[in-house]
Each structure stands twice: as structure tokens, then as C-alpha cells.
Length: 422
Image 1 (cartoon, rainbow, N blue to C red):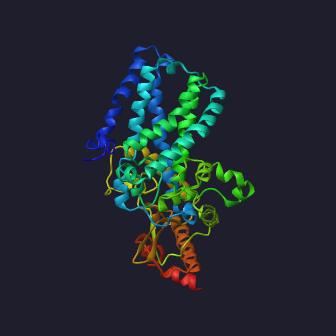
Image 2 (cartoon, rainbow, N blue to C red; image 1 turned 135 degrees about the horizontal axis):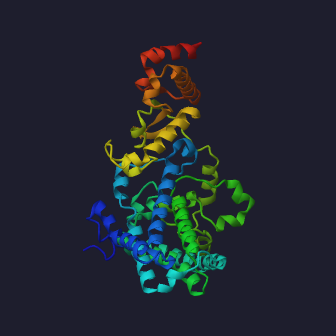
Image 3 (tube, rainbow, N blue to C red; image 1 turned 90 degrees about the vertical axis):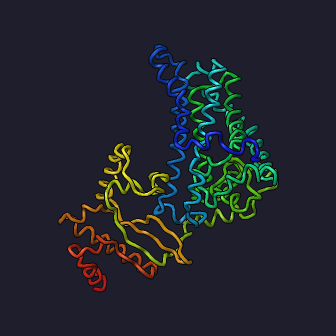
């Protein structure tokens, strides 16, 4: 028999699980239609908006970490994310549904929460104090307990089943873990409200910052320079880094803190490699020379929206055109124009095959641009620059995509070879 609260009750609903937001949506619509637009009746709208923003935080961190041309030198774990991990993390947002229920019950049973002011600065100080004094130590000891054999095998193993952390890994866990996380996150907000310092703005700021830091720690990209911690050594105990938390995922026996390594220091569980590895990763020299490079190009705007850094779930499925893609098509068109004006060949993705590193580089031009006479010279310059760069790096093999060796463009690549040799 599975352990209690080890699986989500809507696990078999698939995408229909989002219908569980239906009562909140109905309440939000009903409030505007029948309650005269009174601010105290907008609580359901606030919940929906807040949870949409929380999902956006996870998505933006994923997009950032997947832009390998920006992050490849600061990647902590070099191994990419395979389809098995994507499948396991497919329902990473289950915890948002649970916490939306918790929020709805709180507003329903405690009507005073509906009349909070827009902002109260005192509440920020109260939340910070309670977070440091209550949330951090409670999470630390709960997290250590989850790494005990009994709780780990029944609950926490799911979170650690992802070999390469990502922002979606931050939300990937069992109901039991997220109930504990809800208490950890909710206590400072409850405390601030009880002392009369709660506000609507405080709920937004604290919850979104909480998610931001969780996603940062799981992003697998180091963003803090080592010089910052060398100049302010105390700071390394007040805020964790992605490297610090990645060590927890790889070794599982240290670095248990929520956001503050101070509690690992007090508990004697700081990994001895934390600072040295952080300095090595943050140096920006953490890179490998690929053995093989395929120089590709963008086909069209719709295909560009299947890029991994757009939506991971969408890019993991076979190519297809869905109706909702029309809504984000203008964004893809704008990016196409920006790439046309200012962009150079960039790293798109990479993988290892039989111990050899393979990379896809993208010429920032769409298919139709290859057939514009006035764009010919610019495209050839992009391709030539990429070939010269690969040669400087020591790349052994470089292959051109179909349009990059179009006979009308550069004579099946012979013109490029001639110009480089000259």
C-alpha cells in the first residue's frame, strides 16, 4: 500500500485537473457581476492572479536556464534533462492547486483577510523576522527528517528522482512535502496578519520571492559571483546559491537549508565543497569544446515556438500547430525581427553521444530569409563567422544544415571554404 499523502488525488485527471480551479474562476466572475465590484470580494481573483504569477516565475527561470548561449559556462551539472525526467516532472504544478485550496479556505473561514490594506511596510519586517526565526529552522529540521530512510523512501525520493535540477524540480514533490512547505511559507504571513501588519501586497511579495528563491536554487545555473562572498563573507550564510543546493541534490547528505546556509552551519551539515565549487563554477570557465557542431537555422516562426526555452512541455511533444499558438505568434514574430537586426550565431542545445559532445548552433535567420536577395551576404557572413569560431575552439567536425549550404546562397558551401582559405 502506498504511504498516505504520497500521491496526488487528481493524478488520473490529466489536463482536466485544471477544472479544479473552476470554483475560484466562478467566484471571481460572480464577484464582479453581483457584488458591485467591492474590493473585499476580489479575494478569488487575487488567488488566481497570484498563482498564475507563481507559474510564470517557474517558467521564466526555466527559460533563462535553457538559454545555453548565456548560461553554458555557469552550468553546474553538465548532464542535460532527458525525456524521463520531463515525464516525471510533467505535473510539477500540482502543489499550486493544493495551495489554491488552502488559500480559498483561509479567505472563506477568516473574512477579515478580505479587508486587508493594499500595503503595510511594517508587515515586511514582521515577515522577514518570522521567516528567519521560524520558517528557516522548521524547514531545515523537516528537510533533514525527510532524508531519513523511512520518510525519504515514502515521500522525498520523488523530488530527488530528477538527476539534473530545474525550476520545475522545485515544485516536483509529494503532497506531504508540499503541505509542510505550505506551513513553512504560510506562518510568516499568518503572523504578520495576526499582529495587524498584513496586506495584499505582502502576500504577493513574500510568496513570489519565496518561489523565486526556490527556483533559483534549482536552476542549475550559478548566478552569484564568488567575489561577492569574498568581499562580504557573512553573506554566504544568509543566502544560498544554485551551486550550494545542487550539491544537496547530487550527494543528498548535506546542505539541507531552505535559503539560509546559517542553519546548515549551526547543524554541522554544510558540504565541505560548497565554497570551492561555487568559486570554480562562477569563474565562467566551466565549458567544454564540442567534438561535433551542426550549424542549423530557424525554419519558421511556428517551429521556433517549439524551442525548449519557450515551453518545455510543448517542445517535448511531436511537432504540431495548436490553436493557442496564435496568441504567442506575435511574440515569435517580434523575436524574429530582433534577431534580424541584432544577433549572431548562438548555441541552441547540446547532448553527449558515446562520450562525444555534440552541439546545435543556430544561424539567427528564418527559412524565408534565405530566399531574399538582399539577405544573402549577411547570412553568408553569419555562417563564415560560425565556421571560424568553431575552428578557433578546436571543433573537429562542423556540418551545415540544408539552407546553409544552398547552392544559390554559397555554392553548396564552396564559396565559404574558398573565402576562409584565402
